[in-house]
Image 1 (tube, rainbow, N blue to C red):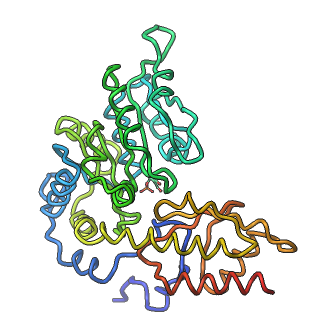
Image 2: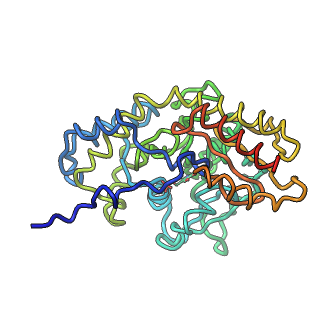
Image 3: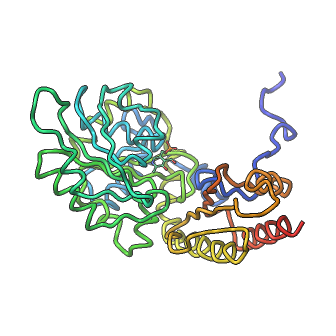
Length: 356
Ligand SMILES: Cc1ncc(COP(=O)(O)O)c(C=O)c1O
């Protein structure tokens, strides 16, 4: 009988070799794959997958929360937090640049009837406790009941001021609201600020951490909080179809990521800083170096005279299997699949493009 597995020819990897579009493009390393292949598994919907249970315990310990839940994605993790904290018609206050507000397809509103009120954040993602205080609705039958405040750290690679975030969480608690941290890239913030993950998480009722971005796992996030909160989130995860069975295979990658890929984030920050400084030496490129805080660079390639700016640069680089994101201000993301040699090669090619 013919098997239906893809042949080696069908399995050709068409993805760019040097990919700056996001840290979500990272592929599991050989060592991570080895851990995955050896993972002990069970049925996680029955709570019987030892690897999932181990990951959840590890994440809860790391953030010093009572419990944690392994979920397929950062979007589902945030959604579960919103739906666990808010009833239909209740309101979540969020930053207008936050992923939860702008890039999660309005899931909490569409699926949970949660009203989103957005607050203007600065270009570096900051919002203040005063802004949040002004946004909380008075107890009046005209208004949706303000129930939750969401913050994010890092926002577009910018580390948020922890004193301000703590003040926002304290204000929320004081006014009877709950608080959620979208910490998809909070480990970058921990490395940059020198604060522990638990210190970053301490003030918040719930925290979501992504394993599939800078930490290099192929999929998954962990949602952390009190045991009662995680019980609710677990029921909602099932309802949304996110109850996975032998997901220990994926959880093993998460365990590997937490054990091996946290401290190395500093290398991504250093490489981002090096890349930005070298790019800025080119007259055609403009970068605010002070804004390169973690693994992201925002580069303006539109200055080059006589060049069709960013679009043609992107096409030129693609010939060498180097991929950069779209947009006049281009977001460049460093991650564990990009080396110093890759960055030097990219600099060489960008230089060559401008010399043409
Ligand atoms: C800050 C932030 N939160 C949440 C998410 C959602 O994660 P996922 O793509 O795993 O759904 C992302 C994705 O890039 C993100 O950048």
